[in-house]
Image 1: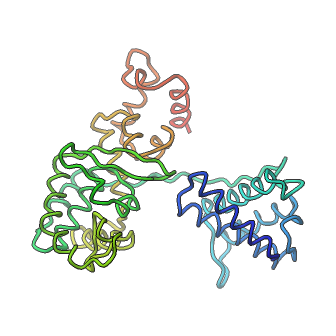
Image 2: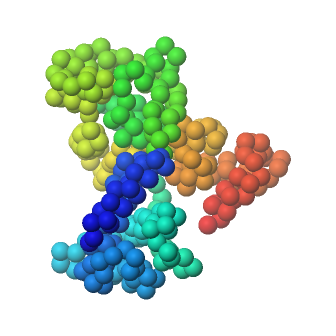
Image 3: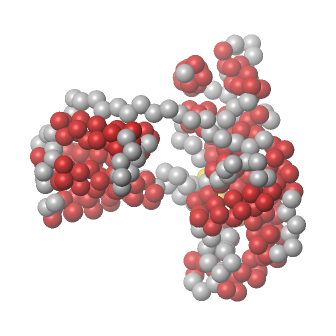
Length: 336
Protein backbone atom coordinates (compact mmCIF):
# COMPACT_ATOMS: atom_id res chain seq x y z
CA UNK A 1 0.00 0.00 0.00
CA UNK A 2 1.41 3.35 -0.99
CA UNK A 3 2.26 5.94 1.66
CA UNK A 4 -0.17 8.51 0.25
CA UNK A 5 -3.01 6.05 0.83
CA UNK A 6 -2.31 6.20 4.55
CA UNK A 7 -2.61 9.97 4.36
CA UNK A 8 -5.97 9.63 2.60
CA UNK A 9 -7.16 7.25 5.31
CA UNK A 10 -6.28 9.91 7.86
CA UNK A 11 -7.99 12.71 5.90
CA UNK A 12 -11.10 10.62 5.41
CA UNK A 13 -11.23 9.86 9.12
CA UNK A 14 -11.02 13.58 9.84
CA UNK A 15 -13.79 14.15 7.31
CA UNK A 16 -16.09 11.64 9.03
CA UNK A 17 -15.42 13.21 12.41
CA UNK A 18 -16.22 16.62 10.97
CA UNK A 19 -19.52 15.30 9.60
CA UNK A 20 -20.57 14.29 13.11
CA UNK A 21 -20.09 10.51 12.87
CA UNK A 22 -19.78 8.84 16.26
CA UNK A 23 -16.40 7.46 17.32
CA UNK A 24 -17.63 3.88 16.99
CA UNK A 25 -18.89 4.55 13.44
CA UNK A 26 -15.64 6.25 12.43
CA UNK A 27 -13.60 3.35 13.83
CA UNK A 28 -15.88 0.75 12.22
CA UNK A 29 -15.79 2.42 8.81
CA UNK A 30 -12.02 2.83 9.01
CA UNK A 31 -11.62 -0.88 9.75
CA UNK A 32 -13.93 -1.74 6.85
CA UNK A 33 -11.90 0.36 4.41
CA UNK A 34 -8.63 -1.17 5.54
CA UNK A 35 -10.11 -4.67 5.24
CA UNK A 36 -11.01 -3.97 1.61
CA UNK A 37 -7.53 -2.74 0.70
CA UNK A 38 -5.96 -5.75 2.43
CA UNK A 39 -8.20 -7.97 0.32
CA UNK A 40 -7.36 -5.93 -2.79
CA UNK A 41 -3.65 -6.36 -2.16
CA UNK A 42 -3.81 -10.08 -1.40
CA UNK A 43 -6.52 -11.30 -3.78
CA UNK A 44 -6.49 -8.83 -6.69
CA UNK A 45 -2.78 -7.95 -6.53
CA UNK A 46 -3.57 -4.26 -6.75
CA UNK A 47 -1.79 -1.73 -4.56
CA UNK A 48 -3.25 1.62 -5.57
CA UNK A 49 -6.78 2.94 -4.94
CA UNK A 50 -6.80 4.40 -8.46
CA UNK A 51 -6.68 0.88 -9.90
CA UNK A 52 -9.99 -0.13 -8.32
CA UNK A 53 -12.80 -0.78 -10.83
CA UNK A 54 -16.37 -2.03 -10.63
CA UNK A 55 -15.28 -5.64 -11.23
CA UNK A 56 -13.20 -5.43 -8.04
CA UNK A 57 -16.23 -4.18 -6.12
CA UNK A 58 -18.44 -6.98 -7.40
CA UNK A 59 -15.72 -9.52 -6.58
CA UNK A 60 -15.42 -8.09 -3.07
CA UNK A 61 -19.18 -8.34 -2.61
CA UNK A 62 -19.01 -12.04 -3.53
CA UNK A 63 -16.07 -12.51 -1.15
CA UNK A 64 -18.00 -10.98 1.74
CA UNK A 65 -21.02 -13.17 1.00
CA UNK A 66 -18.99 -16.37 0.75
CA UNK A 67 -17.06 -15.58 3.91
CA UNK A 68 -20.41 -15.21 5.65
CA UNK A 69 -22.15 -18.26 4.24
CA UNK A 70 -19.37 -20.86 4.28
CA UNK A 71 -17.47 -21.89 7.40
CA UNK A 72 -13.73 -21.73 6.82
CA UNK A 73 -10.93 -22.30 9.27
CA UNK A 74 -9.58 -19.04 10.69
CA UNK A 75 -11.86 -16.96 8.46
CA UNK A 76 -14.38 -14.57 9.97
CA UNK A 77 -18.04 -14.96 9.06
CA UNK A 78 -19.74 -11.72 8.04
CA UNK A 79 -23.38 -11.14 8.89
CA UNK A 80 -25.50 -9.38 6.21
CA UNK A 81 -25.53 -6.23 8.33
CA UNK A 82 -21.73 -6.34 8.55
CA UNK A 83 -21.44 -6.83 4.78
CA UNK A 84 -23.69 -3.83 4.23
CA UNK A 85 -21.66 -1.66 6.63
CA UNK A 86 -18.35 -2.65 5.01
CA UNK A 87 -19.63 -1.79 1.53
CA UNK A 88 -21.14 1.47 2.82
CA UNK A 89 -17.79 2.45 4.28
CA UNK A 90 -16.15 1.88 0.90
CA UNK A 91 -18.82 3.84 -0.94
CA UNK A 92 -18.31 6.81 1.39
CA UNK A 93 -14.53 6.60 1.04
CA UNK A 94 -14.54 6.57 -2.77
CA UNK A 95 -17.09 9.40 -2.85
CA UNK A 96 -14.73 11.38 -0.63
CA UNK A 97 -11.83 10.66 -2.99
CA UNK A 98 -13.86 11.61 -6.07
CA UNK A 99 -15.25 14.85 -4.66
CA UNK A 100 -11.80 15.97 -3.57
CA UNK A 101 -10.24 15.18 -6.97
CA UNK A 102 -8.07 12.29 -5.80
CA UNK A 103 -9.89 10.16 -8.38
CA UNK A 104 -10.90 10.91 -11.96
CA UNK A 105 -13.67 8.29 -11.87
CA UNK A 106 -15.53 6.85 -8.91
CA UNK A 107 -15.82 3.04 -9.36
CA UNK A 108 -19.17 3.13 -7.53
CA UNK A 109 -20.74 5.36 -10.19
CA UNK A 110 -23.55 3.73 -12.16
CA UNK A 111 -23.43 0.43 -10.32
CA UNK A 112 -25.77 -1.03 -7.72
CA UNK A 113 -24.40 -3.12 -4.90
CA UNK A 114 -27.05 -4.08 -2.40
CA UNK A 115 -26.94 -6.45 0.51
CA UNK A 116 -30.32 -7.81 1.56
CA UNK A 117 -30.70 -7.66 5.31
CA UNK A 118 -33.52 -8.88 7.50
CA UNK A 119 -34.65 -6.56 10.27
CA UNK A 120 -34.83 -8.66 13.40
CA UNK A 121 -37.39 -7.72 16.01
CA UNK A 122 -35.75 -5.73 18.75
CA UNK A 123 -36.09 -7.69 21.95
CA UNK A 124 -37.67 -6.18 25.02
CA UNK A 125 -38.66 -7.52 28.41
CA UNK A 126 -42.17 -7.64 29.86
CA UNK A 127 -42.99 -4.86 32.31
CA UNK A 128 -43.50 -7.29 35.18
CA UNK A 129 -40.10 -8.90 34.63
CA UNK A 130 -38.28 -5.57 34.71
CA UNK A 131 -40.26 -4.31 37.70
CA UNK A 132 -39.59 -7.51 39.66
CA UNK A 133 -35.91 -7.38 38.68
CA UNK A 134 -35.43 -3.79 39.84
CA UNK A 135 -37.40 -4.47 43.04
CA UNK A 136 -35.13 -7.44 43.86
CA UNK A 137 -32.09 -5.33 44.85
CA UNK A 138 -31.23 -5.50 48.55
CA UNK A 139 -29.09 -2.32 48.60
CA UNK A 140 -26.72 -3.71 51.21
CA UNK A 141 -23.49 -2.74 49.44
CA UNK A 142 -22.07 0.11 47.35
CA UNK A 143 -22.21 -2.22 44.34
CA UNK A 144 -25.93 -2.88 44.94
CA UNK A 145 -26.72 0.83 45.12
CA UNK A 146 -24.63 1.65 42.04
CA UNK A 147 -26.16 -1.11 39.94
CA UNK A 148 -29.72 -0.18 40.88
CA UNK A 149 -29.09 3.48 39.99
CA UNK A 150 -27.57 2.43 36.67
CA UNK A 151 -30.39 0.14 35.61
CA UNK A 152 -33.17 2.38 36.92
CA UNK A 153 -31.69 5.25 34.91
CA UNK A 154 -31.31 3.18 31.74
CA UNK A 155 -34.83 1.77 31.91
CA UNK A 156 -36.28 5.08 33.09
CA UNK A 157 -34.77 7.21 30.31
CA UNK A 158 -33.90 4.89 27.40
CA UNK A 159 -30.33 6.16 27.27
CA UNK A 160 -27.79 4.24 25.21
CA UNK A 161 -25.20 2.49 27.37
CA UNK A 162 -22.42 4.61 25.85
CA UNK A 163 -24.32 7.76 26.75
CA UNK A 164 -24.59 6.57 30.35
CA UNK A 165 -20.83 6.04 30.50
CA UNK A 166 -20.18 9.59 29.25
CA UNK A 167 -22.50 11.26 31.78
CA UNK A 168 -20.95 13.74 34.20
CA UNK A 169 -22.40 14.79 37.54
CA UNK A 170 -23.10 18.25 36.13
CA UNK A 171 -25.30 16.74 33.40
CA UNK A 172 -28.00 15.85 35.93
CA UNK A 173 -30.33 18.46 37.45
CA UNK A 174 -32.29 16.90 40.28
CA UNK A 175 -34.25 20.09 40.97
CA UNK A 176 -35.80 20.32 37.52
CA UNK A 177 -35.79 16.56 36.90
CA UNK A 178 -33.80 16.78 33.70
CA UNK A 179 -30.70 15.17 32.28
CA UNK A 180 -28.49 16.56 29.52
CA UNK A 181 -27.09 14.05 27.03
CA UNK A 182 -24.06 15.70 25.49
CA UNK A 183 -23.06 14.57 22.01
CA UNK A 184 -25.25 11.52 21.73
CA UNK A 185 -25.35 9.47 18.53
CA UNK A 186 -24.66 11.79 15.59
CA UNK A 187 -23.17 14.38 17.97
CA UNK A 188 -26.66 15.55 18.94
CA UNK A 189 -27.29 16.99 22.38
CA UNK A 190 -30.70 16.43 23.94
CA UNK A 191 -32.54 16.87 27.22
CA UNK A 192 -34.21 13.84 28.78
CA UNK A 193 -36.80 14.04 31.61
CA UNK A 194 -36.20 12.11 34.83
CA UNK A 195 -38.98 10.35 36.72
CA UNK A 196 -39.30 10.51 40.50
CA UNK A 197 -38.15 6.91 40.93
CA UNK A 198 -34.98 7.53 38.90
CA UNK A 199 -34.24 10.71 40.87
CA UNK A 200 -34.67 8.83 44.17
CA UNK A 201 -32.20 6.12 43.08
CA UNK A 202 -29.69 8.68 41.79
CA UNK A 203 -29.82 10.64 45.05
CA UNK A 204 -29.21 7.45 47.00
CA UNK A 205 -26.29 6.56 44.74
CA UNK A 206 -24.71 10.02 45.04
CA UNK A 207 -25.02 10.04 48.83
CA UNK A 208 -24.16 6.44 49.69
CA UNK A 209 -22.04 5.05 46.86
CA UNK A 210 -20.39 7.71 44.75
CA UNK A 211 -19.34 9.60 47.88
CA UNK A 212 -17.15 6.60 48.73
CA UNK A 213 -16.03 5.74 45.19
CA UNK A 214 -14.86 9.31 44.49
CA UNK A 215 -12.16 8.84 47.13
CA UNK A 216 -10.46 6.37 44.78
CA UNK A 217 -10.36 8.61 41.69
CA UNK A 218 -7.04 9.78 40.31
CA UNK A 219 -7.92 11.81 37.21
CA UNK A 220 -10.05 14.85 36.43
CA UNK A 221 -12.20 12.90 33.98
CA UNK A 222 -12.96 10.25 36.59
CA UNK A 223 -13.82 12.84 39.23
CA UNK A 224 -16.35 14.42 36.84
CA UNK A 225 -18.03 11.12 35.90
CA UNK A 226 -21.49 10.40 37.23
CA UNK A 227 -20.97 6.65 37.45
CA UNK A 228 -17.75 5.16 38.79
CA UNK A 229 -16.60 1.54 38.96
CA UNK A 230 -15.24 -0.19 42.04
CA UNK A 231 -11.80 1.34 41.44
CA UNK A 232 -13.03 4.92 41.24
CA UNK A 233 -12.72 5.16 37.47
CA UNK A 234 -15.37 6.20 34.94
CA UNK A 235 -17.53 3.17 34.33
CA UNK A 236 -17.23 1.44 30.96
CA UNK A 237 -19.69 -0.29 28.64
CA UNK A 238 -18.19 -3.73 29.28
CA UNK A 239 -18.57 -3.26 33.04
CA UNK A 240 -22.25 -2.31 32.75
CA UNK A 241 -22.92 -5.24 30.41
CA UNK A 242 -21.20 -7.71 32.72
CA UNK A 243 -22.98 -6.44 35.84
CA UNK A 244 -26.37 -6.57 34.14
CA UNK A 245 -25.80 -10.17 33.01
CA UNK A 246 -24.65 -11.23 36.47
CA UNK A 247 -27.56 -9.55 38.22
CA UNK A 248 -30.16 -10.84 35.78
CA UNK A 249 -28.79 -14.39 35.73
CA UNK A 250 -29.10 -14.52 39.50
CA UNK A 251 -32.61 -13.10 39.32
CA UNK A 252 -34.06 -15.00 36.36
CA UNK A 253 -32.15 -17.94 34.92
CA UNK A 254 -34.90 -18.61 32.35
CA UNK A 255 -33.99 -15.55 30.27
CA UNK A 256 -31.22 -16.76 27.99
CA UNK A 257 -29.66 -13.41 27.24
CA UNK A 258 -29.76 -9.87 28.50
CA UNK A 259 -27.90 -6.77 27.33
CA UNK A 260 -28.04 -3.05 28.16
CA UNK A 261 -29.78 -2.22 24.88
CA UNK A 262 -32.73 -4.39 25.89
CA UNK A 263 -33.46 -1.88 28.66
CA UNK A 264 -33.61 0.85 26.00
CA UNK A 265 -35.90 -1.26 23.81
CA UNK A 266 -38.12 -2.00 26.79
CA UNK A 267 -38.30 1.66 27.78
CA UNK A 268 -39.50 2.66 24.30
CA UNK A 269 -41.96 -0.20 23.97
CA UNK A 270 -43.52 0.26 27.39
CA UNK A 271 -44.08 4.00 27.21
CA UNK A 272 -45.60 3.63 23.73
CA UNK A 273 -47.89 0.89 24.99
CA UNK A 274 -48.96 3.18 27.81
CA UNK A 275 -49.93 6.03 25.50
CA UNK A 276 -46.82 8.07 24.72
CA UNK A 277 -46.72 9.73 21.29
CA UNK A 278 -44.24 8.54 18.69
CA UNK A 279 -42.74 11.98 18.23
CA UNK A 280 -42.12 12.37 21.96
CA UNK A 281 -40.46 8.96 22.13
CA UNK A 282 -38.37 9.83 19.09
CA UNK A 283 -37.02 12.95 20.81
CA UNK A 284 -36.27 11.17 24.07
CA UNK A 285 -34.44 8.35 22.32
CA UNK A 286 -32.49 10.78 20.16
CA UNK A 287 -33.55 9.25 16.84
CA UNK A 288 -33.03 11.28 13.68
CA UNK A 289 -36.24 10.14 11.98
CA UNK A 290 -39.50 8.69 13.19
CA UNK A 291 -39.17 5.56 11.01
CA UNK A 292 -36.26 4.50 13.21
CA UNK A 293 -38.49 4.72 16.28
CA UNK A 294 -41.13 2.56 14.58
CA UNK A 295 -38.65 -0.10 13.48
CA UNK A 296 -36.72 0.09 16.72
CA UNK A 297 -39.57 -0.77 19.04
CA UNK A 298 -41.06 -4.22 19.58
CA UNK A 299 -44.76 -3.45 19.43
CA UNK A 300 -47.45 -5.53 21.11
CA UNK A 301 -50.85 -6.00 19.46
CA UNK A 302 -52.28 -3.22 21.61
CA UNK A 303 -49.63 -0.70 20.64
CA UNK A 304 -49.81 -1.76 17.00
CA UNK A 305 -53.51 -0.87 17.02
CA UNK A 306 -52.59 2.62 18.22
CA UNK A 307 -50.31 3.12 15.25
CA UNK A 308 -52.81 1.71 12.77
CA UNK A 309 -55.14 4.53 13.79
CA UNK A 310 -53.33 6.64 11.21
CA UNK A 311 -55.31 4.79 8.54
CA UNK A 312 -58.60 6.30 9.63
CA UNK A 313 -59.12 10.08 9.91
CA UNK A 314 -61.80 9.69 12.58
CA UNK A 315 -59.47 7.71 14.83
CA UNK A 316 -56.78 10.27 14.53
CA UNK A 317 -54.70 10.34 17.70
CA UNK A 318 -51.56 9.87 15.64
CA UNK A 319 -53.10 11.53 12.59
CA UNK A 320 -52.87 14.82 14.43
CA UNK A 321 -49.39 14.02 15.59
CA UNK A 322 -47.80 13.23 12.21
CA UNK A 323 -47.55 14.98 8.87
CA UNK A 324 -48.99 13.35 5.74
CA UNK A 325 -45.52 12.40 4.55
CA UNK A 326 -44.65 10.82 7.90
CA UNK A 327 -47.96 8.91 7.90
CA UNK A 328 -47.24 7.42 4.49
CA UNK A 329 -43.74 6.32 5.50
CA UNK A 330 -45.03 4.63 8.66
CA UNK A 331 -47.82 2.92 6.72
CA UNK A 332 -45.21 1.49 4.35
CA UNK A 333 -43.15 0.24 7.30
CA UNK A 334 -46.15 -1.49 8.86
CA UNK A 335 -47.04 -3.13 5.55
CA UNK A 336 -43.53 -4.51 5.01
